[in-house]
Amino acid sequence: MRTLLVWCPDWPVIALELVEGIPATGPVAVVRANRVIACSEAARAERVKRGLRKREAQSRCPRLTVVEHDPDRDARAFEPVVAAVEELVVGVEAIRPGSCALAAKGPVRYFGGEERTAEAIVERIAEVCGVESQVGIADGVFAAGLAARTGRIVPPGETREFLAGLPVEALDRPQLTDLLRRLGVRTLGEFAALPAADVLSRFGFDAALAHRLAAGRDHRPLAVRRVPPDLDVTETYDEPLDRVDVAAFAARSLAERLHEKLAAHGLACTRVAIEAVTADGQELHRVWRHDGLLTAVAIADRVRWQLDGWISGRRERPVSGIVRLRLIPEGVLSHVGLQPGLWGETGEERERAHRALHRVQGILGPEAVLTAVLGGGRSPDDQARMVPWGDERIPTRSGQPPWPGRIPAPAPAQVLAAPARVMVYDAAGVPVEVSGRLEVSAPPARVVISATGRERRRERSVEVIGWIGPWPADERWWAAEESRRRARFQVALPGGWGLLLSLAGGIWSVEAIYD
Image (cartoon, rainbow, N blue to C red; front, side, top):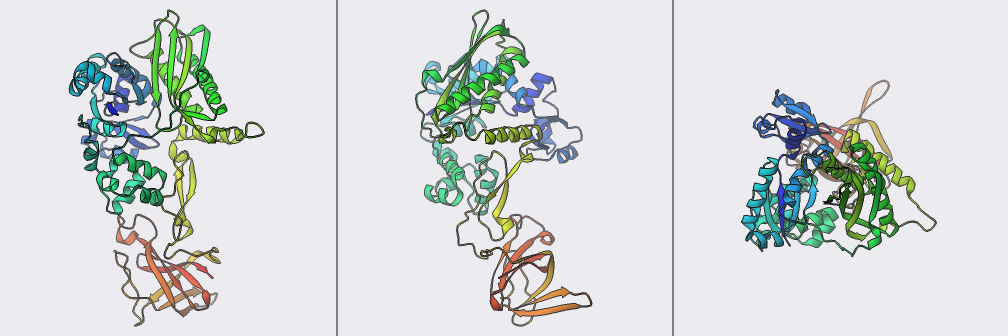
């Protein structure tokens, strides 16, 4: 489907100027969880960019104005922009604050071409809101979003060619793109050329979704079903809602009712339409879209954002309070995970725990709550990876064998609290060295273990009957300085014993002994 996407660059910074009056022309940075998520053009001129820590950004630009991220502020300021677009076209979907999309077929017929449609929307936003925006048109939401970054209109049927030349960083998946870079895959075209089945089996479901996007297919295939009329929830208020705090309470109650009704039918939604009627009969309507499934908290947040924009926004503010509010789920699909248990509502404790964890993340940032994901690796610390709570719990590496050098089951018989010193020699008695390309100078033939007793230092020389390695102890081997690199090595000894060795700064040590 031809999709038109409107994108407002640096929206958290622009929203800061619209709501709090901090000029976006100066060096400004918006941070979340102590990292920069958006910055102004003046800040970028001082080498401030996304992902920098707050202290490093301030060291690069001492005049930098740093403000904490506020999603409510972004959504409230974006409401006039969506309203301005809706004055020209219908069916606008707010993807996130700073970005909205719509089907391009109808507007293109009305305005007489895609270029005229894009020009009309950009001019309308600039005229009404005084905000700079860019429009991208392509086949699908993902491609249209990338085209909007340069204000480009991709001709029909050429979306795949347009995506092929873009770097893999356009997928906005840092871990996947880092892995693809190290494998030699640098563009979306090279990634799309890989077999889909191999991508799914090697990298997991999220990478398979990214592979679809790189191939130019639409944002997400959904098994959309017709929404039964009784899934809508409506509330009428005797006292009109004319204050944001009262509207927020009403939004939470209505969102919980909608989520409970969907869960009772084993359903979930990806879009929610919000309808409001004021005391003088004015009707307001907006559709909010989400990349994943909308939870009760997510629905409540979007309803609260929308009511905040209607009540306290600069434009389209109701002349009287809201007397009726209605939520309509759209993009409904079956979701077995929401099905009630056989003997009643099971999993309520889990839902309460999830809400508490999301609340902590909302206060301290997403990295404040982590969960472990087991995957492939050679040692126990390689196999466990910590990811923020709520992210996809998909291993970055397959846990299936073969993993050369992996410590076999059972777990090591002894893990040393303080690694013992050891020397590794080849058949000629020359110490074995490891190059920066993880190549040994010669096959190891003997290890000499140094142990310190109560009275004197003892050394024991043992023959090596088998070995494997080395491999990097972490993924930063190639980028780290030579003195900070750490590699691991595994050797087999007579009698069925084995050692897990570590090499750091040219010094060998024993990490674990296993049988």
